[in-house]
Length: 304
Image 1 (cartoon, one colour):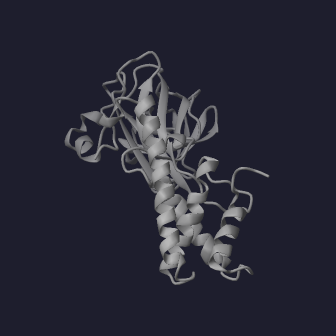
Image 2 (cartoon, helix red, strand yellow; image 1 turned 30 degrees about the vertical axis):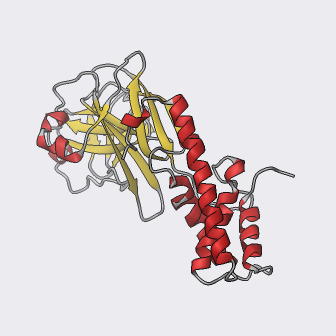
């Protein structure tokens, strides 16, 4: 017998606690299970992210700017020989003659081949250049950032290989107060970063990371962040949670259903207390881990 609970085990346990042996209210139970899992258990510690959700991205490198030699207005295809970009890279375009509508803007690259690419805006919508002024000459595409390969709720550290001082976050107000951050004439080692998540109406989430200033050479980045777990969907899905804490989702779900009048009255006392005990166990272990492994963590984002 497995020592963990899959999704079917969890909603089965909840239904039994409710006395719903036929699982007639399974859809409601499933909705509550995911609410408790994602919005309560995974966020139960207000001081620190849960340590098992911390993850590393270390396959990102900055790239040199690419020289644009052509833009087809009808299709929005940009030509830049050996541009080096991949789909998801974020570029800032400057210096284009003719199709000036692209200048000083940020786009997401969609790679066509080694010499061409198209553009999307940061929210994932394709950019149409059909109504823009005809391209004449010139222009460069600078590497302003990347789309992260993992879904991070928050970023806790961005640094470059062989450098000891991490980049620090920068917000919209500071960027707009000093527009020199967008300058394409001054390139150096980036010292600031902006993490901006997006979600579209198709249900896709994008995690954009922009750095400032523009890089003057190739740097290799290491990014630590707090992952956002996915919803439980298939019967065999297992929560991103140590197996010893899976019962917290059961107790939390039953406790929430108590509030809707779906369980016997005596359970209205038992299950909320049990859920509180489970959450305290998670928080205690999490804070002990941070105390041992990150002694400087109290200076981080979760200090209150």
